[in-house]
Amino acid sequence: MSFQKSISPGDSECLGEAWQNVKYFFIYEVITFSSPPTEAATVFPETPDSEPLFTKLRNPSTGEATLYLFNGGAQQLFEVKAFHEENRSWFIGQSVQQDGRLLFVTPMDPLFLILYYLIKADKEQQGKFQPLDQVVLDSDYPNCLLLLKCADVKQCIHHITEVKEIGSQKFHKYSQEKTLKWLKKKVSQTVKALKSNNIIVGERVYAATFISSKQITDTEEDYVRYAHGLISEYIPEDLSKELLKYLGLPELKSPAAEPPLKKRKLSDAPVEPEEDYTKFNSSNLKTKKANSKMSAAQKALAKVDKTGMKSISAFFSSKPKASK
Image (cartoon, rainbow, N blue to C red; front, side, top):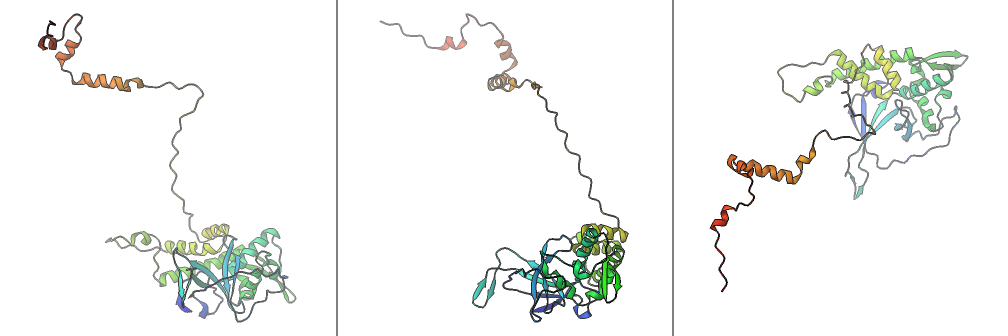
């Protein structure tokens, strides 16, 4: 397993510096998925403390099944991306592994996945305060409860929720105002990382391949808009639009589509031809072609009445021999 620094908008600001901006590259030969039985809300699925766990959870942007990884003890969540090309295999020892995928594993802030369940519960329960283990609950993906075991989740959950404490128990509900402030910080952190790593954004993406004497620089809006796009991959579409307004960025509009071509109105009445298409018949074309090659004298002679007249070639033909 090797390490390489990278930019990840999913990194948690509450996690230690050792986890910040680190991407792991490794090859996982065989991945099997098992769905453990549904657990009670207060009981976490059992996982070996020393072994990582690959599991499917809901994508916080689309709600669809997506592959994630928990480290040993489920203290850290990782996003898994697969790089796959056709006709690729791995040579392992003396054997060939047909699956040639390369998995990229990046630390991710579990609050993004918890945010999906908070928004869902806020709509269904009409803004009622609930314990977190009753909010982050999914019969289709029971391992979602492991999100609550990740380091510093309970200490950072106040960034996206309102909290009420009764005795020793805490109750939470989704707060859009707090969430937008938290996401704005994420955007600012991403902009800072883009600039420090000299990442090309805005118009320079298109101009970088052309030689120009004019120096093109990215504006602050270019960086913010680009960072907003990265963060939007981890939040629902409606929240992405609200964040766009909160950042003071105008929504980009696609160019106006060309008006559709006018269609001829159909009718049950018979359609009459607008031109005389019989003039294109082959016999007429031959006559027209022959007439186009005749001189003026030939055309005048052709109009003379030739009844009873012999052809001039008849005077030069040989006379038939008289029979004996």
